[in-house]
Length: 253
Ligand code: PEP
Image 1 (tube, protein in one colour):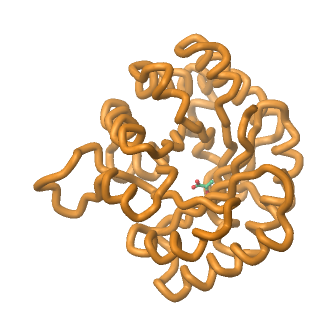
Image 2 (image 1 turned 45 degrees about the vertical axis):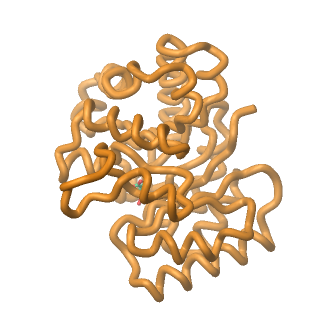
């Protein structure tokens, strides 16, 4: 059975106090209003992982994610955070390859592969992000572009490792822009991604892989996007910073 997931990427927002207040509101709303099988994931900044994690511990619908991880095991890597450290504070998912990290921190395909290996080796699930810039879509090369991103970072994983992977399709032109992919554009790409995965790994694993949509997803458009056959949930940026909006997105699944 494919898992439904709605994940909130808080990016570099909130102070310690604000983070706790946001997560306690989300936690209460999820307890009161969300029924059915959906995994709700929150990805606060590193300094708040432990406190946010403690708050959601008793709620089996809620899960903790990190926004990044080092590809290195340990040692002299000033400013980095290892997979073992994340695991030790209760992290279950790690967002890997977000377009902002690819762009501003020059993370390449090989580095992303190593980050995924480290994440899986420590018993956590990577949320691997892919998605094309506007010029690739305008030139009708979006399938090829995303196919290469998947191939270059995932194809060296074993079937067992791939079983732990969640994919997030996030067209760069839709991130933080208010311009969402249409449900047809999302479905077409998700179907294509699943087909590529079935070529790299066994078909059943590809069928069972959760593929999330991300890019200006909000309470108004979530239901239409989530109703598509290959859209298994969302990776939510802006709308995850407001408890009411985030809960309404979750309820759209
Ligand atoms: C994101 O950055 O992962 C994202 C989906 O952002 P937004 O929802 O704000 O477009």
